[in-house]
Length: 284
Image 1 (cartoon, rainbow, N blue to C red):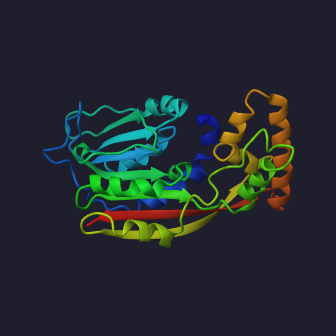
Image 2: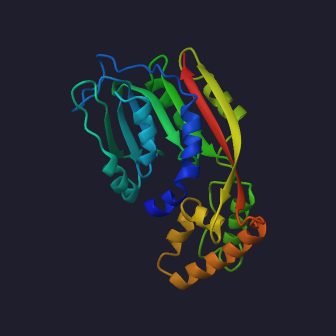
C-alpha cells in the first residue's frame, strides 16, 4: 500500500527528525565480536539495523555517520524495498562499509545476539506496530553492553489531521467502507517509553527520551492532504483502491475538513504542527 514517490514528496521535512534523533546516538557503538555470524562483504565497523527503512534514502545518514558499518535496512513493503535497493552499497577493502536491505515485518522481527547489532535504529515506523513495546525486551537482550535502541515516532494522533480522519472514517457514509485508523493512542509519551526501557537488560538501560513539535511550513494546494497521502492515508486509500469514485469522494471530504483546520497564511504557506517522540536507550 506504500507509494515511495508520494512519501518522498516531503522528504526534507521527514528527514529532519531522523537527523535530530541521530545526533543523540553515541558515536562509539559496539562492534561485532568473534561470535557474530559472518556475512558476505562484512564491514569492519559496527552492525546496524534500520527498522522500517522505507525507500532507503533515509539510511544514507547512518552510512555517513558510520562509513565503515554494515547497515541492513528492513521493511515489509515490496515497493519501498525496490526503491531502497537502488541505494545498496557493497562492502570492500579499506574498511569500506556495506548497505543492504531485506524484507521483515517489525511485528515479529527479532534479532539474535549472534547478529552482532550495536544499534537498532527506527525512524517513524514503530507507530505502525500495535503493542511495539512488547518487542523491547527481546531487542535489548540481543544488544551487547553499550548497544543502543534509538527510535522516533509521530506523536500527533490527536491533532486535527488525524482526529478528523478518524471521525470521517467512522461517519455513517464511510464506516462500512473504511475502518477508523488503529494507530491513535498506540504510542507512549517520553516518560512512558523511559519507564518501559529503563529496567531492561541485566543492568538496565540509560534512557534519553524527549518530544519536539516541528512547525512544517507547507506550500501548494491542499498541502496537509498531500502530506497524509504519503503516510496516514495509506490504509484508507488501499481499501478504496478498487473504487476510484469513492476514493475521490472521500479525499474531497477530507480535503475540505483539512482546509478549515489548516488555513494558509497571508504568504500562502500552511503551518502544519507535527509532534514527535524520541528515545535513545543505551544498554548498561
